[in-house]
Length: 170
Image (cartoon, rainbow, N blue to C red; front, side, top):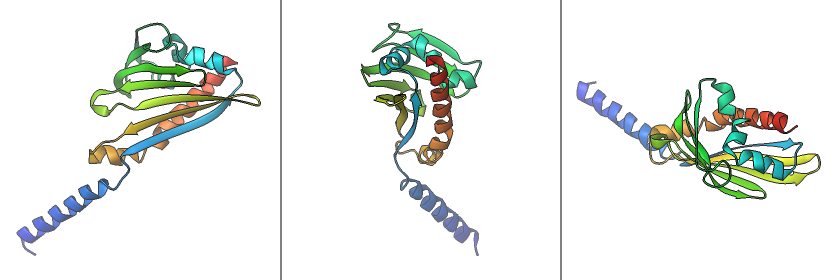
């Protein structure tokens, strides 16, 4: 086999691999649910406040050097914080608060702008809290491959945050 033939085969394999990543999902969603022994309004008050959110922030627990800089009002739409730590840097802003849902817009610059949601539903034994994140991985083939591992990585983080939320509201 000549060098030119080998180079063509390698280029073909590389092109096919790159093209194959575009068959992967563009959007990802990670979701975890827990029953918390608290009223929905208590959880909303805590989770829609920057100071309250920090009481169960799973990233703060995992990164003792995480820097948090609050901005905006203390609570409600527009409240939020800038963060910088081992898992990245960016901002998280409360975008919507209703009696059964909080939506956060996260801006991590070139790493993306996922949307995080906490949905609440009153059930026997407390409040069912569903913590989820949706992200658009775009056309970047590396991000799309990375998206395959998001559930495993972020799911554990959400589980930890929900467990801490249960302790904080007990």
